[in-house]
Image 1 (cartoon, rainbow, N blue to C red):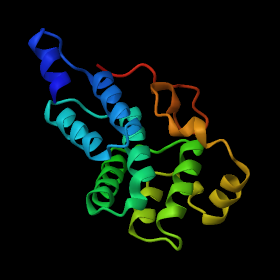
Image 2: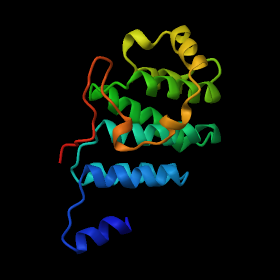
Image 3: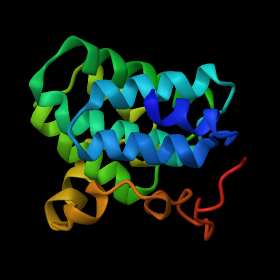
Image 4: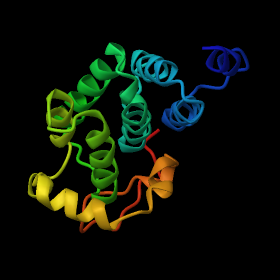
Length: 166
């Protein structure tokens, strides 16, 4: 990746924030394949993804999943698996937004829905609960941006993830 190469050539070591910013950019440019590659490059460099990275990447993939390209579906399932293995869950706003995306992809559930729902807190996995909330919440624009402060901790946590581990 050219940006990373230029940084390293000038003695600047990329960190998780660097990669999150790049993934966010690829997501905004509607290039989820580049976001996925950037994610893989970050992991290969030895950095551990945090909640903000996962949020940006998943939001990008889910918003493009109606294209029905296999690499997007495979990416969603792989990223969800990593989140579950890491013990990461999403906040209610993100769960609602992702549920809306899922309805466009899989009307009656399926492999993608199952994988994504594993990143929700167990008490949020009721189809009826998420549908009721998502039907009353029309503020998707806020969740489409995957800035650092968009991804908050679980319900009951006041901590925002604007301070990343370096």
